[in-house]
Every structure is written in C-alpha cells, then in structure tokens.
Length: 275
Image 1 (cartoon, rainbow, N blue to C red):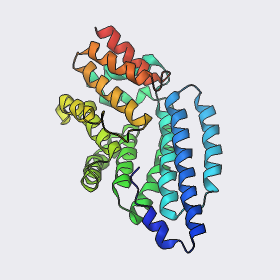
Image 2: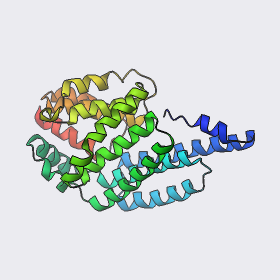
Image 3: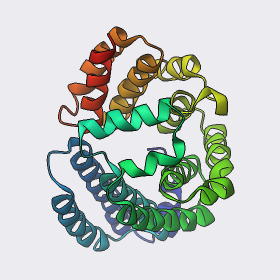
C-alpha cells in the first residue's frame, strides 16, 4: 500500500534502533490485516469464529508501537474487515436473490439480504471514525480510498437519508484519491467496480468498468484481494451484460484464490443458469 509513513517515522525517530522497531511494527500490522482479510474472504468459518479471531488480532495489534497515524490507519482496516465479515452473504441463494432485486430495481429491499446489520454498522462506524482521524493527520491517497470504501459500504447498511447525506462524498473522495495517486490499485478497482455495480440510470457504465478493471491485470502490485475483486467484478459485469460464458472463465480465475467464497459461488450459479 502506498502509505507516506516512512517520512513521519524518520522525523519522529531519535535513534536507528527505535526507527527499526517502528518499521517492524508497521510490518506486523500489515501482516495482521492481510491474514485477517484472508479469513474473511475464505468464508470457511462462521461469524462467531471470525469475531473470536478478530478479538485476538486486536489484542496483538494494541501491543504494537505504532505512530498515531499508523495506528489509526490499520485500526480502520481491521474494523472494516470485521464489518465486511458480518455483511458477507451467508448463502448462495442470498447472492442470487440480492442480484435479482438489483436487476429489478428493488433497491429499498436490499438490506433484507444482510443478517447482521447492527454488528456490521458497529464495526464500520469504528472504522470510519479511525480513518477520519487519520485523514486529519495525513490526507493521502490511501487514506482517502479507505474512507471512500468504508463510507460506500456504510451507505448500504444505513437508512436512505444517510445515503442522501453522504452518497456524493464516496465518489468525490475516490476521485481525490486517484488524483493524488493515479496508480493506487485499490482505488482503480473501486472506480471500475463503481461503474459496473451502479445501475446505468444512476451513472453506471458496465463496459467502461470492465475495461478499467482489465487494464490492471498485467500490472504488478496486485495482491490476492485485488485479483479476486478484479475477476469477480469483470464477471459480474459480463453476467449483467448477458455474456455468461465469458463470465465463467473469469470466475474460474477467482475460484483459484478463494474457492469457498459464497459471493463467488453465487456468481458461478448465476452465470451457469444464464447460459
């Protein structure tokens, strides 16, 4: 991730030894986030097991000697992924029903497909508070991207009035992120996915979104999450464009990364049934 943290560490550090310690703490925080994110994407354990793992991760995270901005950033990531775990679909059938509601324009009914809304909001709110505090210290591309991502998910969980109040900030903040760093891979993925998942009546453009994601495939620096989101994003765009056979090949690539992911398997069923 393109965090501008090393400069802050150098300015604050008084000795080479303490600088090394801070660097090791950042590496450990990165590992905690990556490993926990993997658990969320794998979906081979239930919410209670994931929450127990989260509690243990947070205990270890609290022992790290991080600078304030670093701590806020990684806290936001961890809280976000716990929220995503609660938000994740728990059945293939739910993925399909959610898709059908979207295609039929039943946006006000989408919340019925989420089974742990209160828990999801709780962790997203904590994530949002942390990243807002981070941005007051360090308004960089990655912090803006994280704010946009958390706020985008929060809008799905909150009442319609929340979306009316905060909806524009999601796209606006993402544009700021890309302006500061046009090569921010996760911001580019969000930008492409927005065009795919947003209905055309509200400004979405599936072909543009697919092309945006396809540009990233040969680019170095994509992690497993990035590749999974690229493959499933392209596949979903192809499914709603009635190009299901093409979608299946992309879903096959995603399956190599997280084969038990329920969203992935829901898309596979949609693509198979649409052929």
